[in-house]
Amino acid sequence: MGRFARTGTLLGVLGLVASLALSGCSSDSSGAQFVEGTQPAATGSSAPGTPEATTGPPLTVSPADGAKDRPVSAEIGAKLPDGGKVTQVTLTTDNGKKVKGKLRTDGSSWVPSAPLKWSTTYTATVTATQPDGSVSEGTSTFTTMTKPASVINSGLYLFDDRTYGVAMPVVAEFHPGIAKKDRAKVQKRMFVQTDPPQPGAWHWVGNGTQAYYRAPEFWKPGTKISVRIALAGIPLSNGRYGNVDRTATAKIGSAFEMKVTNSDKQMRVYENGKLIKTLPVSLGKTKTPSSSGTLVVMEKKEATVFDTMDDPDPENRYVTDIQFAQRLTWGGEYIHAAPWSEHVQGRQNVSHGCVNVSMANARWLFERTKIGDPITITGTERKLAAGNGWTAWDLSWAEFVKGSALPVPDGGAGPAL
Image (cartoon, rainbow, N blue to C red; front, side):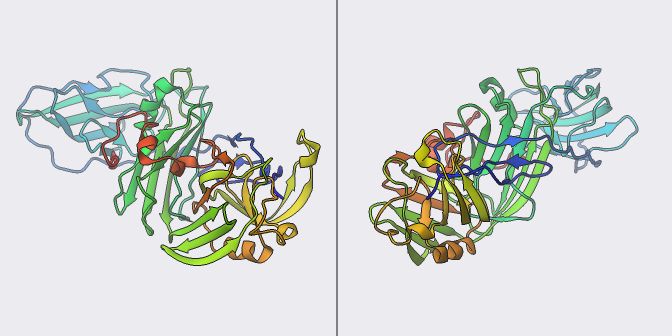
């Protein structure tokens, strides 16, 4: 059995609500829709460090002195010759309150730690080191724009203080999708830090509705991932603006991997590299094959209903109670208990695309898996379609970095802040 349903809600973060149709074991790859979240307030503080004595010419600061209607995503920088770097920034409101922020690691600008406030006047003092070693300073007073009426919707698939599997990508979602000409600008405002440090890269899906961040290899167990999708107020070419900043800090748990081979119809389960169990499975029949590729557990439901009564093919219409369902694709492929196919599991494919296992084995898996655990399926008649689920790991690293809107150093990029 497979191909199902219309119930359920998946993940979202910080005000994000993602409603998912449980349309099981089908080929439809439509994604979730999002509602607008809540914007965090800016916090006050100053950049660290002691100002150096200025010895060079005055700096021209950005935003320019006297500028009005600046976006609340504005970063503080200065016009510098090649080799020059901003070394310190102090930003204050018109009442003297200092704003927290961090310098980019490349010294190109200073990023406030939260969106600036709408219709507010700020004064920035910037210190920079010139290529000849001289130190320059400049000051600018500017005003931010009023809150725009037209914004995009965005989402972040990550919860604070949750533990995920080693294949959990950072997934940012946008509705409508980000146009190609805007992606580099948006990507520069998507920050990821990992502890222990692991280089990574972003990859955009074709229509710009999602971007994935991952490392060259699965995350190291125990990794702490901190994310800020800092899009509040960023101007886009379609006349809209980013709606909110979203942040999350999560942890990667143990390495739990599932590998399914169609040739022998078995699932081999590994924990921290050690084979711990082998389970018989039934995959999609020839007419409705399972997708081959590296997939990721996106959602878990102990009990749900698969409802496909609106399927155009009468043979695929049914309403069935399902237990221990784990979503793998947007199109409706799942791992789930299928007591009706237990007699053929390990010998014959009879599902509508799902990975059928016995009730006992489904429970055993469900009790051990995490959102973000990988499952690799090989040898079926259909290849996993890009974007049909969290398909970040279904690409080689060389293929993955081609989807970045910014250049990626060999081996991946470090944190921008």
